[in-house]
Length: 84
Image 1 (cartoon, rainbow, N blue to C red):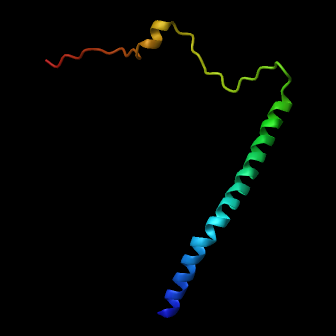
Image 2 (tube, helix red, strand yellow; image 1 turned 180 degrees about the vertical axis):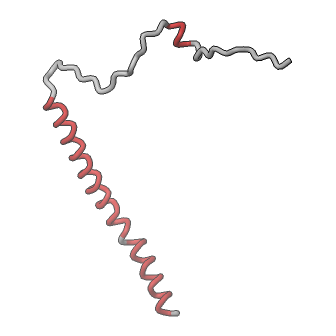
Image 3 (cartoon, rainbow, N blue to C red; image 1 turned 90 degrees about the horizontal axis):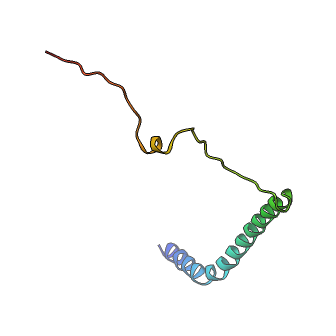
């Protein structure tokens, strides 16, 4: 039982004193690494395009419809059935 309490106290001391010192350094390293990779990807994208060149990533598909038809719903032809 005393060993368990001793381990808990040691874990508390380590987490209270050591983690505040290590976590900022680990996060700073991780963020710098990801920032460098993002910068490299951005530079590669800029190098492939010439100055003044236009690049379109997405072009929506348009159907040849009048503006009034775009606002209306779909037309369904139906018949009335008499059940006399």
